[in-house]
Structures are given as C-alpha cells and as structure tokens.
Length: 465
Image 1 (cartoon, rainbow, N blue to C red):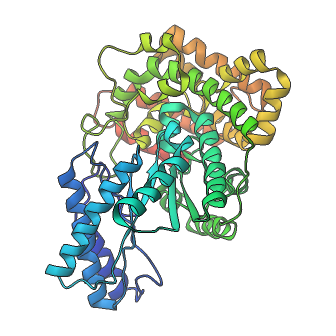
Image 2 (cartoon, rainbow, N blue to C red):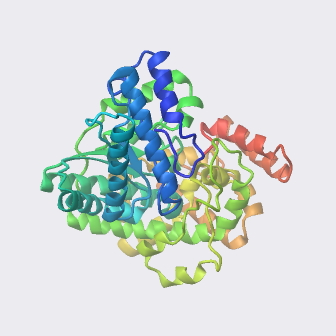
Image 3 (spheres, rainbow, N blue to C red):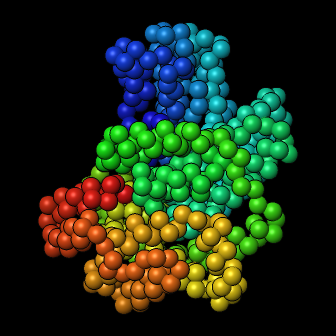
C-alpha cells in the first residue's frame, strides 16, 4: 500500500516499486504482487492532489504493461468515506483518467481499476453496508455498470483515536456482521480489509497476540501489516504472524441479531462517552507532546490534515459534551504520534475511558451484562490490558495532567483491575526501562534530544505508535 493520504509521498513511487520488483527481484505484477495506493480525500485535501495520484497510478500501470504485459495496480483506496455519492464522483474521475491514459499513453483498454472504500469513523463503519450498497446502486443507475465484488476497508486507528479503544473494536465487529448480512441479501462478494497496527490501541496484531487477533476479528480477508511489525520485531516472528493471519483469512464473521446490535450500540455509546470527555481534557497536552515526537514519514502538517472531534458527538448524543467543546477546534495529530504521546504521558491509550464505561454499564445494565460483554464480544481485552499496564506510569500522569483528568484515569485503572488480571505497578523489566525513558523524556522537554527518548521508548514497546 503506497500511501498518499496526508503524506508527501513522491508521485513516482509506484513506478519505482514496479521497476525494482520486476528487474531486481524478478517478481511478476498481478501474479506475485499488487500495488494498492491510498489516494487523498478530496474533502480534506483537494481534487488536484487526488487527480495527480490517480494519474500517477495510470502512468505506473502503463509502465507495468511495458515491462511485464501485466497490470500492477488494480485497486485504489478511497479514505475517509462518508457517502455513496462521494465514491461515485471519485470513480468517475478515475474512469476519465483511464480513458485519457488509453488515448494519450497507449494504455490497453483492458486496464481497469476499482475503488476500495475506507471507513475510519465509527458512525460510518456502522453504516458501511448502506454506503457501499448505495454506491453499487449508483454505479448501475448512472453508469450502467454492475459490480458484484467489493473490497471494504475498516480502519481501527482513527476510530480508536476519536471514539476510544473498545468502541472501535465493537464498531469493526458490527461492520463485519452487517457486511456479511448485506452479502447474503444482495448476493455480492465482500472481502473485508482490517487496517491495524502492533499496539493494542491500533489493533494489537503482534506475535504475542496473534491468536486473540484472529478470533476477535474473524471475517477479514486482508489485514494490513504495520511497519512496527515489519521492522521493530524480529523478522522471523513477523513472518510467523503473517503466515498465521493468512491461514485464517476468509472465514464467515460473527453475525449479530437486531437485539444484539442494539445492546452493542449502547455499550459503544458508553465507552465512547467516557473516552471522549477525557480526550477533550487531554487533547491540548497530547498535541504539545505530538509536536516533539519524531516523524517516521514526510507528512502534511497537523493543521492541514487534522482529525476532527465532531464525529463522536453524533454517536454519544450528549448535550453536556457539546458545551465542553473548546471554542477553537482542537486538531488532533495522526494516529502514530497520538498513540506515542499517550504513552509518554504515562497513560497507555487503550485505558482511557474504559474503566469508567465498565462501571457505568454495570450500574445501568447489571454485572451480568458487563461479564457477557467482555467474555463474548471483546474477548481480547485481557491481553490488551496486560500489555498496557506494563507501560502505565501514574506518577508521570499525575504530574502532567490536571487533578480532574488524573482522577478519571485513576478510576479507569481501578475499574479495569476489577475485571482483568492486571494492577498498577505490576511491570516487568521492559516496563521498568520504559518508565525511566518516559521520565527522561520530560526532563529533556524543550531540548533537541527529547525525541531520542521517545524513539527509545517506542523500541521497547515494539512500535512508536
């Protein structure tokens, strides 16, 4: 996946990969590999950027045919999808550029490309089946094209960043369920992609958690492999993870009945609410830390490509939270920096809001409801919190957060300890080393070497963010 979404990726990169893969590695496009670019969102960037990336993909395919008589790029990922019409507009633009490539570059008429809609917001994930069905109908009605095969991309990281860890898990599982029901109803093929990373907040696809991952997200056909797993984990372990994930791809997901969906939506609302009210209090501090976390790629600035805080309010539907919104919009960093910043604050992000939501659900729905939720619907949380508590540092959190916010984090820790076999202070040698680096990070704040300590802490965790 060559990523152009909010990043300063060179337009020629797709062609360079084809050149390297075919000439040096003797790989055949379409047979041994595909390149799938994530294009910019027109809403968040501009149409010009999107057109440039699409045209670069067309030109790269022309080169691919020249060197191998095969097509290297068959899909384009459309990020931050919000509507069926948005997908149709992007698809039409792609078709015009393919036509231009045939007329001006000699691209074969057999070259075609499809869109993969990427849903990164919890509310949109819960309606992904309706949006893709709307796109299918628009293709048929306005372009006369019948599509019977869809790849649908569900992203964990951005959903977690704005709605919280548990809400984002439940949203992906409900999306998989709804896509499966849609597949049966309309008789189309649906091949879901799960976009995850190595750390719990971002999906916890790690050597020590691969079985939990497979069971939690049953129904995927494709899984993204983050650079943390490729470069920060021993190569042999990363290969084992890839092989294990591939061996379990393509199973039928868990399908929820209407009553189950209502209960899960209620649980998601509780988790999102507890997380979001704390996020509002922490956001400014997280942004300040994020600005000193080192870049891993060349990106657009946080100001030019922010993550909005408005989306979760639709799910939570709480007027009191509207009143707590800051007068000026808080522009959250991208997921890697956001996650790394939380660890450097001493507060692993999967913890935020989770304990208080469990307590609220216990009071509203009873102990049996909570027990059923964590044993039947989010079974991987035990492993997630075992990891997160190893990097918990309440001493730093107390120093860096205001007393109200710190009290909420402390409640989260206490309530999580009630349900899972974890407790504050129960850390191994890695946790101890990490704690020292976090303290050093704050000692060096404002000095050039501060980034070095953030990187070292990321190496211990197995991923920066």
